[in-house]
Amino acid sequence: MTVKKHAVRVTICDEEYTVRSELDPEDTRQVAAYVDQAIKRVLHAGPLVETHKAAILAALAITDELLESRKGQTEMAERLKRLTGDLARLLPPTKRQSVGA
Image (cartoon, rainbow, N blue to C red):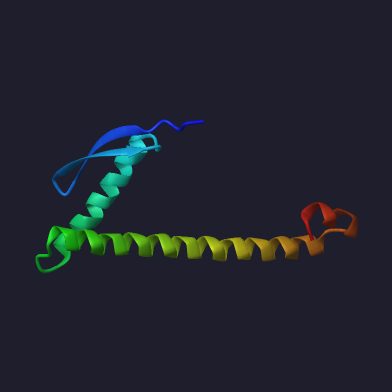
């Protein structure tokens, strides 16, 4: 089965690109807009930086956001697992198996 790729025109740092992606075109536009804003934040944050260097710094910032989000998800999943175990112990023994305890 072949997945349909969409060609979407986006603008990043005043440069137009055609992005071919399996994502919904609106999702591709949102991703491009997020990247554009991240690069602009770097460019406006301090001394003038070349655009390609700003793109690298923006990629590092976006990757940091991703890794922090994953870390938060992992911590939340562990908390939920502990809470599920705590709640299961409060149930009568015959009901505990259905909760996975």
